[in-house]
Length: 257
Image (cartoon, rainbow, N blue to C red):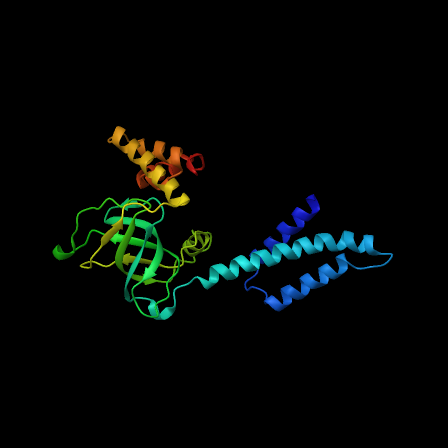
């Protein structure tokens, strides 16, 4: 059993190190060969079985990784829909995070009000307060699990590729965020439902309540964000100046949640 688990993990790890995914006919052929060895009749069946069993597990891990990668890569923003205004309906998927000029949040797209439009299932949106007078808006209390209608402008994920630096594109890919963008100013933003009942939205709503309780009880405490981060795993509750202090004092690893 241990050898089979290790072999499966090696198959998954092998795919992670490849620049391109193998073709499905090749994967299917290798799986068929491993099954044939496993079921080979004759005197050497036991010997072949001991060899074929780990090989089959490794190929199953490889096929599993290829399947998941293909599924993720099919969820993308076509180039022709970059930089275009699109009206969408969806749900705030996780805890929104405030920054100086607005909020940033993950959004599950449910429908697109544009013929022929194809958008990823989950996107990262920024909602700015506005720069010009007619773009300004008051802060709205975005909460996880709410259904909204927005007009957005999207682009495919893009980040710097500096050696040994933070890989923003990989971080987005890992979280299933296949497009980023922002809510258009001067467009109607409408809350359609206060809460959509789904297990992951329920968890995020509870996390939001706990975070809000911390900031209500400790409105001026400099450590309020730290306590919230430790309680619900929300690293972005910690202000940037405190992260800078953690780096300078060498204790960042203690807050890596």
